[in-house]
Image 1 (cartoon, rainbow, N blue to C red):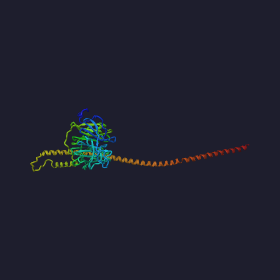
Image 2 (cartoon, rainbow, N blue to C red):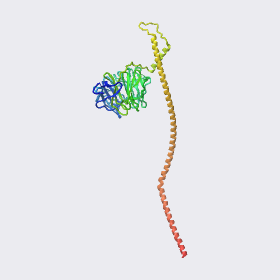
Image 3 (cartoon, rainbow, N blue to C red):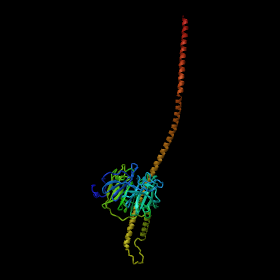
Length: 507
C-alpha cells in the first residue's frame, strides 16, 4: 500500500483488516483509552499502561497517516469539586468514554488519581484545543469506569460500569446536553446483570443494544435491548453464529450493522471480528485472526470514518499480554439497508400473539364486514385478508416451534446442570467425610504433640540437673579412689606383719 498518496484507502480490499504504515513517532502503547473520528482525524485520549494512567491527547491524520500530539489549553476558571479541591481539566485517566457531538468532543467518567465522587464531564474543542470541565445538574451518577455512553439525539445514555469501590452497576442515566442535567431512568422488565467493559449501540433511534462485558467472575455473551420509548428491557433471540463471551471489546454501528472487535476473558483474546445485523438480529463472523494479535486485545478502540464517500473501521491500541499502538483499518463492504425491526417487549409480543390466534380460531374461514357503507372507504378483498391472516398464523406456528425447541434445549441444559449439581453434592459429601477424618487425625496428632512436649520438658529438666549429677559422680569417684588406697595400704601392712611372724618362727 503506497503512503505517498492521500487516496491509499482505495487500494484496500473489502472486509479485511490492514495495519497502516505510520510515518513518524507513534504514541505510547496503551489500552482502556478513548477514541473517536472527527473530520478524517482519529483522536485518542488517556488510557493505561503498566498500571499507570496516561494524560496525553493524540491525533492521527487518516489522509497523511501521521501522528501528532495536541497540547490542551486549560481554563483557569475551572469548576471545583464538591470537596473544594480543584478538578484536573485533563487528568491522567483510564476507562473513560469519548463522544463526538457536533464539532466538539465530550469526555465522561473514567478512573483518575484525583477523581470526584461523581461523574465528571469535559468538553474539548479540537480546533482551539481548549478543554473545560462542565458543571452538570440533577441526579449526577456516581463516578465509574468501564461504562457505556451512547449519543441519542441531544442526550447521552450511560449504562453500567464499576464504581471506585469496585461495585458493579446496571443503572441507566441520561444527560441532556442542552441543559447539562442528569436524570436517573427507571426501567421495567429484567435488566442486564450488573457489568462493566461491555459495549452499547443505538438502533433506529429507539433501541439501546447492550452486548457482553463481565462481572468480577463471569464473562457475558448476551445481548439486551432497552426500548427508549417504553423503557422496557428485553433479551431478543439472536440467530447465526455463536459468539464467545468477552469483555473489553469495542463496537461501532455502520448502516444498521454493529461491528464488534477484540475483547477477551482474561485467558485468551476474542479472535473474531463480528457483525450484528441489528434489524434481522443475526450474528455473523466477518473475519478472524490468529494467536496474540492486536485485533484480539482487551481495551481496544474502534471508530468509523468516511473516506472518499466510503465507510472504514479504524482500531487502535489494546492489550493481550503486550500493549499495542498499531492502527488497523477495514474497508466496509456496502450491505443492503433494511427497514428497522420493531422489537416488542415479551408482554406485548405475547398479547399480540394471543389476540391473533384467538381471532383466527373464531374466524377460520370468513371475515364478517359491517353492513354500513362509507363513501370514503375502500373494499378489502376477503381472500387477500385471509391469505395475510394465514401467513401470520403460520409465522406464529413457526415461532411456537422455535420456542418449543428452545424450551427443550433449556430443559436439557437444566437436566445436565441438575446432574452436575448432584455430582457436586456427592463430591461435597465425600470431601466433608475426608475433612472430618483429617480433623480427627489432626486432633490425635495434637494430643501426641502435647505428650511429646511434656516428655521434652522432663528431658530438659534432667539435662539441667546433669552438672550436679556429674559433681556427685566425681565425688563418689574420689571417695572410691580414697577407699581403694586405704584398702591397698591396709593390705600391705597386713602382709608385712604376717611376714615378720613367720620370719620369727623360723628363726
